[in-house]
Amino acid sequence: MTLHPVARLDELSEDRATQVQIGEQKILLIRVPQGVRAYQGDCPHSGAPLAEGAVCDGKIICPWHKAAFAVQNGALCEPPALDALKSYPVQVIEGQVHVGDVPSEPSRIPLRSDDRTFVVVGAGAAGTAAASALRDKGFGGRLVLIDREPAAGYDRTALSKFVLGGKMPADNTPPLRDPGFWARLRVERVNADVRHVDAAHRQIELADGTTLAYDQALIATGAQPKALDVSGANLANVFVLRSKDQARAITEVAHKGGRALIVGDSFIGLECASALRSLGMEVTVLARHDVPFEKQFGTQVGQAVRRLHEHNGVVYRTDAQAQAFVGQERVEAVQLSNGERMAVDLVIVGVGVAPVTSLLTGVMRAEDGGIEVDAQLRAADGLWAVGDIARFPLAGQPTRIEHWRLAQQQGRLAAHNMLGGEAPFADVPFFWTLHFGKRLDYLGHASQWQETHIDGDLDGFTFVALLINQEAVVAVVACQRQALMALLAERMRRPLSRTEALALVAQR
Image 1 (cartoon, helix red, strand yellow):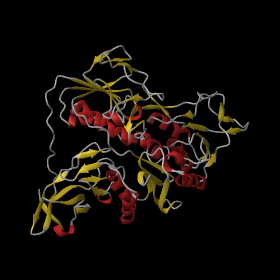
Image 2 (cartoon, rainbow, N blue to C red):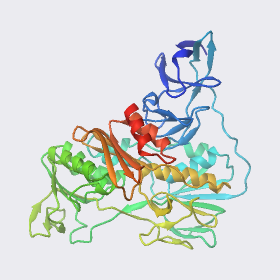
Image 3 (cartoon, one colour):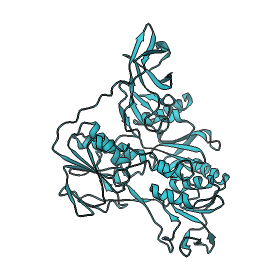
Image 4 (cartoon, rainbow, N blue to C red):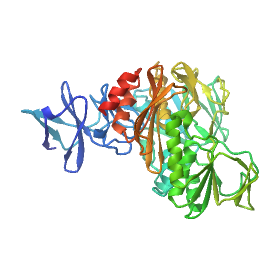
């Protein structure tokens, strides 16, 4: 290893990170009371430049997807990253910072001998995060990960954002873990459908009749897209989008000049509209709301999103709904509720999802099918539920949120509590959505607010919108303000006043 002079100590700050380079290696420097810390410069999740994010409350926050790492040692604090930062040796010599060109050996908690069996049902965002965290935290007992899909878990968010628009082949959808990861951690990955989870007797029955007793289990079965209960819904080329196979099937029939119909104005629905329009398809959206995303973003931002779609050629309709799909073997037309008949080549149904929870007994089920959990995400003795299926307390209200990153946050927290912790969920929900190259980030979860304060240009999609209720910021939506949103991802863990929020907006 060779030490390289990279910066002056007095050039570094404790409230921001500085990127330097040794050869082709990007290195992140942060000043701390004890000296300087040096870490890999790109986020291990998807390669975002961490120097463009924020440093807040002892954490480094990624600008893209808000993963967070401890300033002191690079440890993972928040997903969607699943690994800590690589650290590099540092020496300060006469005010000059020198960094080694070989990363230090990572420190790991040794696995502790344990005769218990833990089972994770579901290997998507939440299940993968939970199983990884259990081993990271030193659980050395038997760990079984049950996955209904043959291929290991992958990043589903890429399907509507990148795969459908031809920016990424379906087979290149990023895996959540490399192929040999589970074997290295002695995790038994079982490809099977679960027939029944009996919370009272702590037993899981697989579809083939095999039973598995557990000491602790985590249910992360996620949600499945809702189908339309109309004639012709089973025709070929009528799709929902949840898996790589479905994304691949859509891209095989999508073509320039073809006619696509999107039923529903959900986030996935409008991301699909954007993707297919970018391929040159004629795209019509049958929407349920005059203003898309109004419930989440507010009227003004929602109207800007609709204008963006219409400016790019999407036909956005609220005057009729799909009554039937018509065709011989594949869909050829849609019969609308106003009597109109519209010719189509493919249909994507994006009218929401339903939690997959019918396999559980011995738990409390909410009206929407979600599983009632306490603040620690416990559904019953020895049983935990996370992600799309969990109805958990948020700001004192039972809430179920279908966000990819939140599922990972809850998976990590449940892992901690399965090992004896009692930490309540206190993280900030975050998601992002992509439309015609415009990325919108959303922090918080607001069911109501009194005012929307907008700083910037809505139609230019360079803005931040603060959703304010009783002088407190309850949610934020922004475009092209990634450093600010990285800071707020941590700062919003505690109450944020309008006054402080406006000061942060002005600074960033």
